[in-house]
Length: 512
Ligand code: F6P
Ligand code: MG
Image 1 (cartoon, rainbow, N blue to C red):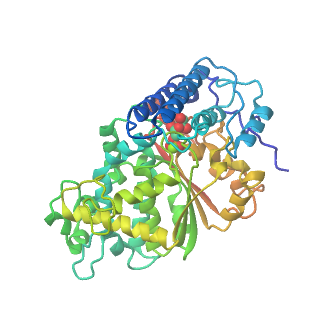
Image 2: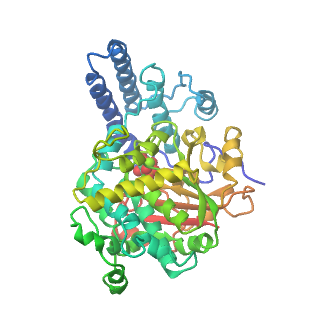
Image 3: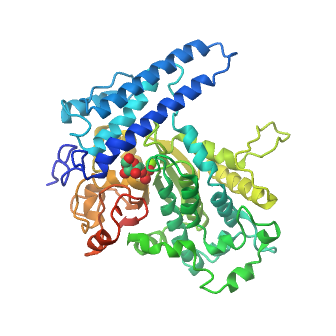
């Protein structure tokens, strides 16, 4: 019989801020207050920037002051470990949140409850402060941060765009990626590209904003450098000259394997559990399948998710990719549907005015015309996928509920989501929070098989009917990890203090 797991009864002891040595404690103690203070700064800047000619300026200002007051109160409650209180806005998820509070945590508070619950509750409370207003209902207080960090990713973004779209073969006009996948789904080129794409998508998760309380843009750039394969850096970079951008395909083919030892490979040993071979064995047999990507962060991570999704389509594995975004601002940098379209717009909208009245964007401004073209081409290609229904973006309240994904198959309000997702061949969960929700954010022995730790989504006897292959690409930022070989935990403990949470290590986990 399936055990009745609930937020109060996870499969193992829940991670919680009660443990002073845990990352949950550090998060509640130091990280979340900073995040919350930044919201206040952001709203303050936003209302100070309101135009005098705005007839609603006064009303907006008053509402903004109210938001600041509520967010200040939230910070106070968090820092004094005050009891949770029910929600008072009228979003459609209020009843469910209030039921959960009443059932699991009627008298509990931030440090006493599970870390997962407290943290989700915080972001939902932030939403409440905006939802109670008329003019700031849809405001995303993290948008500016998302933008800044994405802008700082120009080098890596441009480099990848070139690899994806710039012709390297003058005769066929094929790009580097086209050439890699041209011999079909079972070819060596397609396989090699797959392993590269998986790692690119994985390390994209290293740059999220909630971990980087004070985003250090140089550090982000360094993290992104590891994703640029020598194949791309040969012929592209923000500094590359136009001539360098037309490297001939034969030159790529002739490079020695050593020259191709990419930054990615150098970081391969940081993937502590790597099921990508198993994933490849599943993906290579897909033809025109459906892949669902449960997104994590906006900005650079979303860009590389697009890169991976594009690969799946071009290689013939998927003819439909469904991206799942969050409906409310979540864990600072998570993708909302607005971010999805905004990101595409920054790529394919021209940098100077055109005849068709499309407003120009100067978001990325590479000086090399070939790089400018690459951004436009890649953005246009992806926009076409959206326009033609090959890529879809959707969102559901379940992703911002307090529930772990054990509840996806059975939770009453997630039934429409689950029934739809059952049509898929592959679910790819991106990032740390999705991982925590997959494994119920509790203290599993690190050698527990992933497929066991994800309960009904795994392949044990309690597997829910219709769940396809489940994959997680996650850099480790919380003190839970499973799927490690015997001895890995002990070895890591000896070398790095905070390896489970510092975002430097990663896992690629698959449940077949
Ligand atoms: O704040 C805690 C946390 O959940 C960490 O586990 C992680 O650092 C971050 O928030 C979210 O990370 P990600 O964007 O990868 O889900
Ligand atoms: Mg995130």
